[in-house]
Length: 415
Image (cartoon, rainbow, N blue to C red; front, top):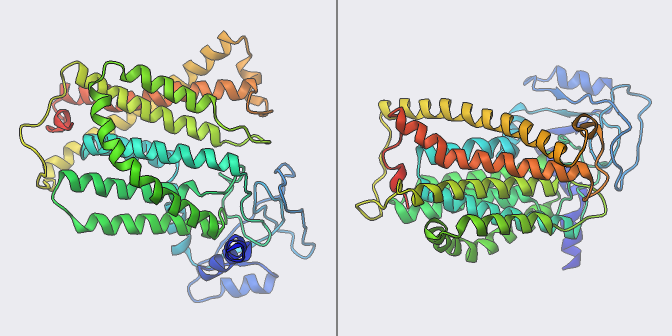
C-alpha cells in the first residue's frame, strides 16, 4: 500500500501528465526554434523572472547560465526553469477548468443559478459546497503536505502555491457541485441524461487541470475525489432535510452565524501562514448570506409553496425568457460588484478604526501568523462582504427584479 502511495505522490508522475498534454522544458535556442517552426505553431512560453521572494518548502534555486530567460515555476519552491506549451487547446481548456474552482466562478455561477434556474436546488448545492470545502480546507492545514516539488514539475500557476496540497479541494468541488446539482435536480425535475454527462466532464476537466498546471500530485486528486464522494453520502440527504428547518425556524440566522464564526475561529493553525483560512471564510460567509436571504423571504411571507408537487417538466427558454435572463444577469452582476466594492472598503475602514489601526500601513504589512492584526481584519471584512453579497443575491436583487417586472415567476415558490 505504501508503495502505491509513494508512486502516486511522485512528482515525476505529474511531469508525465504535463508532457502528455504538451508541456516541455526549453533546453536551448535550437529547441525553441524547432517549436516555432512546427506545423501547428502553437507555442506559449513562460518568461517569469526570479524575484527572490518566494517561500522555499523543499526545492532549491537553480539557474541556467546558458539561457537568460528564466521562470519561477513555484510559489513555494523557487527553481529557475523555462517551459513551453505546445498545444494551446489543452492549455486554455485546463486554465478554464481550474477557474471552475475559483472565486470568480462562485460569484458568477451561484447568482446565475438562483436568478435563472432553481432556488431550491441552489440553496442545497451551496450548503453541500460549503460543508465539503470546509472539511477539505481543514484537512489541508492539518495534514500539511506540500504541493508537488518543482523541479521536476512545471508550475504553470502561482495563485494557490502558498496553500498545502492534500487533499485537492478543486477536485472535491469538481465532484460535489455538479453531482449535487444533478441529484437535487432529478428530485425536482424529470431526469435529463445530459446533466450527468456535463457533471462527469466538469469533474474530469477540473481534476486533470490541477495536474496539468503542476499544482497537485495524483494522490492529492484521488484523495480529494474519494473523500468528497464519501462525504456526499451523508451530507446530501442531511442538507435536504436541513433546508426546510433553516427556512422555517426563527432561530436560523442566530444558529448559522454562531456556527460559521466557530468554524472560522477554531480553524486549525499551521506553522506558516496560508490563504486557506481566508478562503474558508469566503465560502462560509456566502453560504450564510444566501440562507439568511432565503430565510428573510420566507419569514416575510414573500415565499410560499408551489401549488403543484415535483417532479416538474423542464421548460426550455424562449427568446423572451433568454432576454429577461440576460437583463437580470446584467443588473444583478453590476449590483453584486457594487456590493463587493462598497462593503469591502467600508468594512475594512471601519474595522481598522475600531481596532485603532492604520489601514494604509496594514495593507503593506505582511502576514505574521494566524493571529496577526492584518489577518484578523481580513477575515472580518471578507465575512461581512461575502455575506452581504449572498444576502443581496437571494433577497434584495430578486425584490428589485420584481419591481422591474423582470423576475422569474417561480422564484418565490421554490421551497
